[in-house]
Image 1 (cartoon, rainbow, N blue to C red):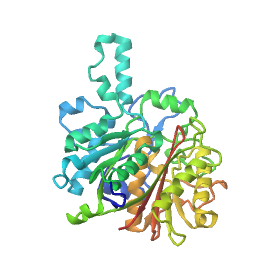
Image 2 (tube, rainbow, N blue to C red):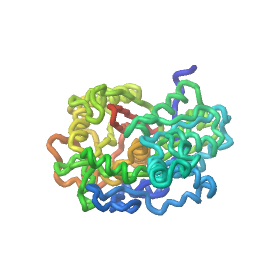
Image 3 (cartoon, rainbow, N blue to C red):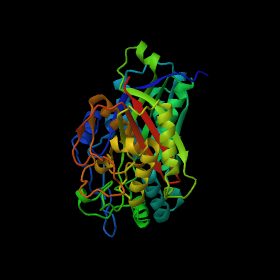
Amino acid sequence: MSENRRVVVTGLGAITPVGNNVKETWEGLKNGKNGIAPITCFDTTGYKATLAAEVKGFDPKEYMEVNEILRTDRYVQLAIGAAEQAVEESGIKGNVVPERFSVLFGTGIGGINTFESEYRKLMEKGPRRVSPLFIPMLIANMAAGMIAIHHDCRGTAMPAVTACASGSDAIGEAMRLIRHGYADAVITGGTEAAISASAVAGFANMKALSTADDPNEASLPFDKRRSGFVIGEGAVALILEEYEHAKARGAKIYGEVCGYGSTCDAFHMTAPHPEARGGAQAMMDAMKEAGYSENDTVYVNAHGTGTPKNDSIETIAIKKALGEEAARRAYVSSTKSMTGHMLGAAGAIEALACLFALNEGVIPPTINLKEQDEECDLNCVPNTAVKADIDLALSNSLGFGGHNACLAFRKV
């Protein structure tokens, strides 16, 4: 198999807390729109955490038949919506052999809302009342499977399930499928719909979530006041395509996926390694593959969750990977300040942010950054977007289990 095939992005789709399409989502990120608000999908009485970044006004009927909606979890519906947008924009359908068309779609948790509702039926009404579709609706591969059915993708169809790194790992592994000759085009990205009673209770009880009441005081990456992340939901899809294939059909090209690093801290279930060894190595691997040079102007879309340990240790990782001087020159921001933490979809929306930052020369801000922590002492683009022509965009994703992923993007 060839190992020199270039991989480009030819379509995007987005259903997110800041917009239900790509244009709305990017405008929201660029303009510092806060997608965080009080939780509406369940009663938060008695909960420590009461805020989330919900998708607003999503109607699955725009993308699916009613019978199909009744047979799928929300996380799959969001994925199908984003994938439909990306496929339509790219014009890939009918322009690739089905056996060479693949799907690699990330989710951290899968159908947790289905699990909750069916388990409630089991406890209250007995085993005969549990839906025969319980398992197909629950399992984490079903977004990939349903996208493949919708678009006749007969190549690889798999999930990436690496907690908060799922979206980035999906994109990186999709790049490798094309680079090494196993596919000509891949629908990839990430999806999550885990703003549920049990997930919020679980995350809150492990002290991972912000307990703030004010949406502007909740998701605070790099800020001294940060105390946890805000859970978010949504889906973002990318069409990855082999460069010559895309060029031959005159496709619009957003940029090139030119590097990917994937590592494990091999240290702790939830805490990052104190010396950032895995995160730094993932960045260095992606940079090496992308042909990083000291002359590159770099933007890092940080994992930047707003948890105390993540942000300070990620700062160490960036300094180790770039070197202290280059790290201080780089632009670093966390779009999670606006979208909350979309878990398995986080890496996908952050890839979108990187591609638009490259194309428009605009770095999205870290909003509500008022008291920057001395331990997070990089240029974190506080509160307002800045104009900057960048050469290389890096997107970091660091997940429970010690999973680290870094994607690198350049203009074509």
